[in-house]
Length: 230
Image 1 (cartoon, helix red, strand yellow):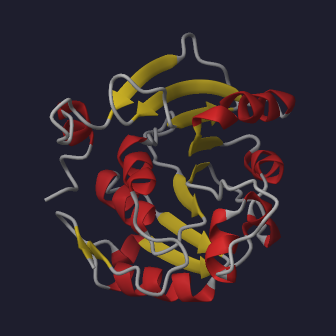
Image 2: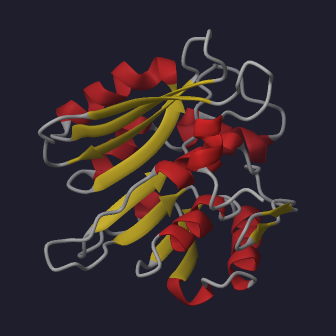
C-alpha cells in the first residue's frame, strides 16, 4: 500500500508495481486546455494499478481520465484504487488492448509508462514480463495510434533517438523533454518526452537529478513531486 497526499495505491495484484518512473511522469506530464478553455480527455495507456491515472486526476480537476490496461488483475487494483479516491466520478478504467479501441472523436492527451525491456529472453513471471517487455506495447504501434494527439511518455534514455525518429515519421514533434539522472555525476537513465502534432517555437529541455550528494532526495525532485509524496 502506497499512501500519497490525496489517495492511496494498492498494487498487490498488479503486474506493474508503483515505481519512480510512474511518479515522475504523473508529476511532469502536462495537459493544456483548448482554445475554448476545455480540457481534453486524458488516457493513461497501460495504467497498471492506476497510479498515473490518479495523479493526473489530482493535477487536472476539470479533466476526465481513462485508464486502459490489458491485464485483468491490474485492472482490479486500478478500479479499487479509483473507487477509494476522491476522483472516482471523473475516471473510467477499461480492460482492453489499447490498439483494439477506436480513436476518440474528442481531443486526447495520452500518457504512457510503457514496457521497455527489449532483451530476447522473457522473465519467468509471464504477467510481469508482459508488463515489462516492449513486445506487449511496441513503440511503433503506440506512436502510430496516438498520431494527431499529445503524448507524454517516459523511456530509458538510450531509446530517445529511436523514439523521436518514429515520431518524425508520423508527423509528431517534440515539445518538451526532461533527462533524468540518479546523481549529478551520472549519465541520464530515463527521459520524459512530450510530443504533439504541431511543432513548438522552442523545445523546453530540462534535466532532473533525483539524489543529492548526501544520498537524499534532491530539492528539484522533491519540488516536482511535492503535491504527492507525504
